[in-house]
Image (cartoon, rainbow, N blue to C red; front, side, top):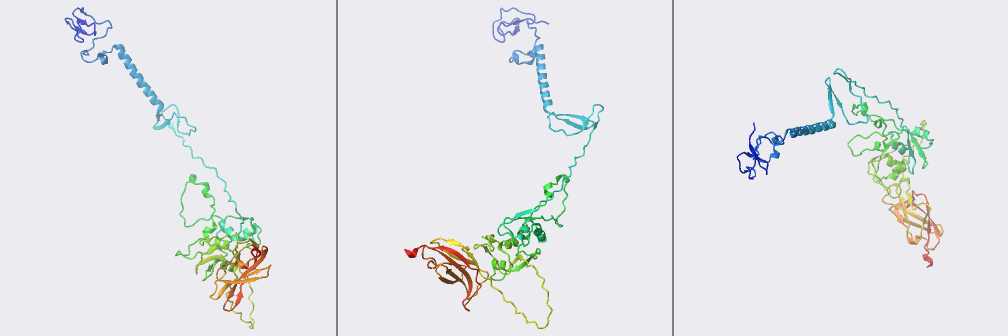
Length: 440
């Protein structure tokens, strides 16, 4: 059904046939001819009221071609979104209830999994057993090798290689061609077989999977033998059992480390190795008794480990009835040990000379150390008494000219009450260059 209307030449809006002014823009349309057919674009009448808002924002104002293009654009956008999601997310295929995941991400190694066979919806999953690790060869640990340094002992080297006892001592001596264990050459290489690893029977048993066992854990761990000897003498525990070849020594009043070493025919290095709980401060183990600065704090009744003397078999004589009773031996006092200056040392002019020695016992109330110094060039002999462990030579005892003089000295124990001199040390020599003060 057609309707007569007037089309405004300004805004192209339709007005009633009898309108004189455009209801939309107010233009005069009195002379505009009345039309009775649709416009030339052949668009259908839109139910949208053109008097409200902008007509180009209404959906209904689109023609048939515009609606088709809009729908095609929306469908294209949806298809693009779904395609991108399919590329980014893995697809899952369910076959016979078993899920098989196919990943588009390339992998360097592909592990065999369930196989998918075209045909009926069934899937066969093949389980491959875990590969068995090839058996490894049992490694035999290499023997312990130690190079002898100054002051080292064979017992200390064996203990440092992890042995708890000295049963291996004859084997080590035979293996290295050693005749006397106390005679070692500095720089000599000592080969000691490693001890067999033992397991603590009180340790709990732990179950560990074979795949988690580390081969390095099965290798014998080298242990320091000295740490096996350590114990706390103040701990409320039983006295530990000594290793073979060792014995306990009870420190007597006034006894020091040097007296103990001399008594058991050993040195400071061996005592330090056997007693790691005792501090050997400022000790030079290259010297037999640690040097003049060596300090070892011992207390009365302290237990220390010492080498046990080698037992000797003495035949028991048959008593005849006429034997003379042997008197009871008395305690001996060892001679002091001279330390410095070193034997054969050279003393420069104006340089003070201090004589030092080490005590091997405790002086009595009337005992003194007697120093005897002799000048071989002049024949002069000087004597002094002191209770200290050192003596500074006075300047007037030294050479009074510019020549070199040979001096010799020794230290002994002097009993002032009885007037006796005993326990003299070995004589030591040094060369002292004169300052020439007597000629000035």
